[in-house]
Length: 382
Image (tube, rainbow, N blue to C red):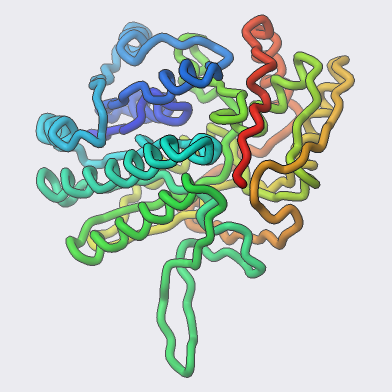
């Protein structure tokens, strides 16, 4: 396949480029370096400085002989995106090119407006580019389990059958987001569903939980090929942040009671899931939804796992509960159905002590780069 990866410089985007390239597909990577620039603006840069996309693609080609074509530009610029589509006529487009942080979207009005414009306009542009250039192109959009919120019923895989006053129908599962970012992801899904019904597009929406880890088969070959390891309050995943906090003797920061439960997955499983979706595409006129995670953990459970391994390594890890700056349920029911990707062949990588040990080794190697001031910036939802 010719696979267009939008947001190719991101935490998931770059490993996705390598994963598809390694398996013989022709990859085109697009990014505008938003996350790099936002990290500089907010003084929350990643633990490891990585080469730019051109440099990383060159390194990958030197190591493997496989070429990744790189284009730097903004997906909200329709003429730019359309030119990329016309040049390559991709068979699949993987859409990571959104502002990816709930916290960023809640900083102030300008950050909220940027999130709204960037996320919805990029999705709209993709829809129109697909329709104009290759209507059979499979759109794979990264959604989030956060779209569902924490309802007091089981969360089905995207769809819910309703019986009301003696009649039945099937609808997208009701969603209730916890941030402006998550709200834009809901609007993405609704927009894609509209154009699937109207234009007969083929779309897979991956409702993904929080991701942890750095290593895939490809990124582990060279430190310069690793993805961005953000550990700050704005862009850092909670598991990645806990590891870095433990290494520098900073308390593992839990918002509120810590009973908040989410569905987590290893970055290796993200690669598997996206690849399975691409190689088993949705049908024409289908919006297919997969709930993408492997294990549910509460924040308390996750912190305890890190503490167990950290204590064994001599860190004497402390867990600290902070006043919750977010508006969310801290005690809630959480049962998510997720069978679609398993049926396609997902072989889960579960969170073990050995995997946590690997994370500690990386954080220790780059310990001198850790900036404690970015663990908690006090950004409040209210």
